[in-house]
Image (cartoon, rainbow, N blue to C red):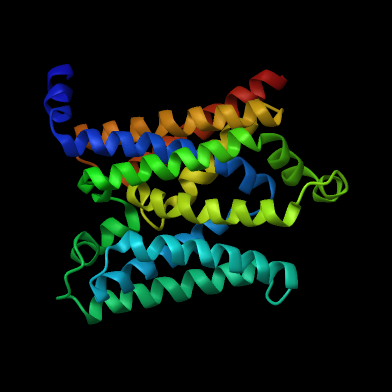
Length: 279
């Protein structure tokens, strides 16, 4: 087993996959707690489908998928927040519309233009939806992009931890304390877009919720303080994703599904631990 792993890790693309997997999981673990507590858990599904549609458009036009998906997804995340504030469309309805519409448009484009130079996206739609091979096709530039964006996300949580705490639990109190709640909500929405685009490489568009929701919910089964939940969620996310990647590597299973199933198992274990702790 050890010799086999050493052989695998001698390949650069495997090392890239694990580095990116750790960074993406860490960001998703941090963000997931905020989204779950603010009841924005399902925003991951909506934005992941938007990212898929944007990547399809980029593929058809011959652009690098990330150069289109990243700004489009961030912009849509902010627009969702604006629509919710102005009560133009209820949040769940807007997310449902975006999910169905973006997924349909993206899949239609990839079938209408199958001969376009779109890399792995058009060549394997399943990889984009379920993350079966995407994480194993990363290049050095993709990893550096993950590093840069992950540093920005982690830095945001570290520097503005107390303000994020206030905005997450009581926006009214945060506003009265002088916190610019609207600005922080926009930043959280933008970060959600960034993390979701990155997470598509690991688990695909249809399984992103498993990476964002399960670590946060698992941590909440055992811990009660915000700091403990965030730290535990980050650790669970990284450990679960690394375990899923190892299973996918050694057993040749789909990466996204492997990661998702590992997080489900961890959630069940932490649920049992929580019940034992309260007994």
